[in-house]
Amino acid sequence: METEVDVVLPCLDEAAALPGVLAGLPPGYRAVVVDNGSTDGSPEVAAAHGARVVHEPRRGYGAAVHTGLLAARTELVCVLDADGSFDPGELPRLAGPVLAGRADLVAGRRRPVTRAAWPWHARAGNALLAAGLRRRGVPVHDLSPIRVARRAALLDLGVADRAFGYPLELLLRAAAAGWRIVELDVPYAPRAAGTRSKVSGSVRGTARAVRDMTAVLRSGVAPVSASRSPAVANEGRLR
Image: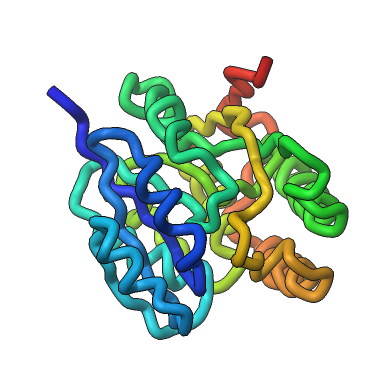
């Protein structure tokens, strides 16, 4: 029997990318597009391509993801950027360890396919924040926007950030709860033409995201010692 999985796609002005992203979803993976105030017709494009569309008027990545989790209906959920930078066909590989009971959270570790896919300032900011997490006993290497976990467990973590600090707080809380976190390498491509990243698209955007995430790190959200942290595998490196 085919496993049904809802895929939460936070969306702000991604009309150019949505047709390709939605067409690339594997069988059984159902799109829940969370419109976060688009002005380019993204909700209409998403609906025309078979996605379920919900709206979150509060601007912020965390707000959109949280609304998507509330709207999801399946036990297992994926979160995926709607900009075309990830291949949706990778989702079953990421879901595999969770479905098999080997992991509680699987996150993609981005491996850019070209230099343009991940600008230097975004890579530097990500590396800085990941190092901060490792110092707190969360041995990850990427604050990735592609991940898989069980919906109820995600909501039970009580992640409070509704801006760019959401992924970092999620990792901190998951590690503190003893979750088995797995990182899998995933190809990371340039965004679809006609779209622009709210984070990596500019130094200012990256700085804003780093500011939000650094505030979460400083807030002391349930850090764990290295001796107590769950094992983090780095399976499936790209060949």
